[in-house]
Amino acid sequence: MKKIRNIAYISLFAALMCVGAFICVPTTPPFTMQSFFIFLAILLLGTSRSFIALLVYVLLGLVGLPVFSSFQGGIGMLLSPSGGFIIGFLFIPAVFAFSLRLIKLNAFVSGIISLVVLYTVSVIWLILIGGIGFSQSSISTAFMTCGMPFIIPDLLKLTLAIFIHKRIKGWIKL
Image (spheres, rainbow, N blue to C red):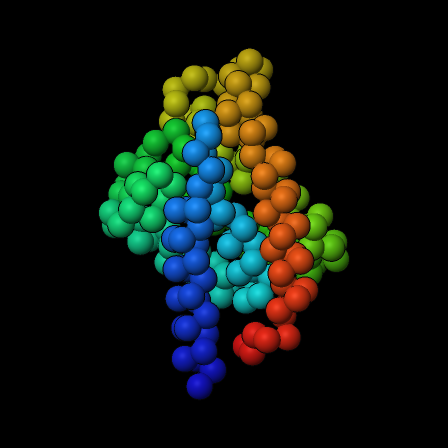
């Protein structure tokens, strides 16, 4: 019964991450709810189950299903300048768990550290794939593209995930 429950929760959160990509504020860059569902999955399911859900989500997108932002999918998304976010998402569960459980930080600070890692991976990816080279100005430009616009929305999504987790954590039986 526990295996079935785990599969159901993992599948549910993989689906919610797909839906989160479609919940989009059409700005430049677009803001989606993927990171909200990633944080909620980590808080409710724990590290390994949330990572599996995230991996399922990424694999669905890589095989071509349009589950990434702007209804896109395929390996080309990973190889695009914004593919660093997809790769960076995969680090969030481990970083969050490390800072929450091993360093004993609270969920909000753990989320901030996870976001810093996400933005760092995204900036490095943009520099490498975008071919803009490593220099102080290119790193600054990449951060203005892959980090700065997302800080406030991501902090709001993290706060919302923590709030919802506190309200419903007793309902989830793992």
